[in-house]
Length: 222
Image 1 (cartoon, rainbow, N blue to C red):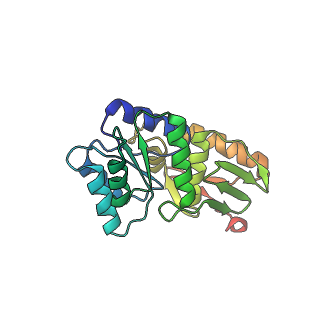
Image 2 (image 1 turned 135 degrees about the vertical axis):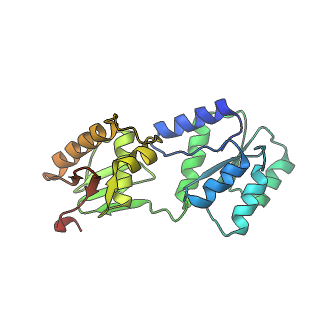
């Protein structure tokens, strides 16, 4: 959550290309609202957000008992600002300008510390997915997935046994509102299904006509 639109866009796009689902808030009030209604693995906070600054947001979340790791971003690098940020509840601190590789490394380190009730390893039937290393295996053998295919499988695993609507996948994986003309979900699910079928010698994703998709509908996968 970053107050400079260009920097925020750069960060969000970079993280999405790495396979992360990203929400962006232009001000402190919206940032607080998002943090209250969603469970995140890491929160990036700019110190100088309008309406409510990063220090206030971090302190508020910690008072409420929320333990989501927080990375504070700021143009300031004075010792007192670092101390104020950490005392407010931030887990790490990164001064601008910074390289994206450094931010990514810090995000990954914070994710490894736990995130918001995050389970690092997801499994179902023959599928194993490592959310930190971004690795997928079927019957113990690696399966090479694109970032979007990984995100799709991760979302399906988090909702295994449920019917996941196409509109939900558009919102959570592509950050898009429903477009009845788009077939982006169907194309990516078809590619993911083909890779899993090749590895498992059976279908692991089922289409629920007119609704969406379900992972592991067969009793053998429960």
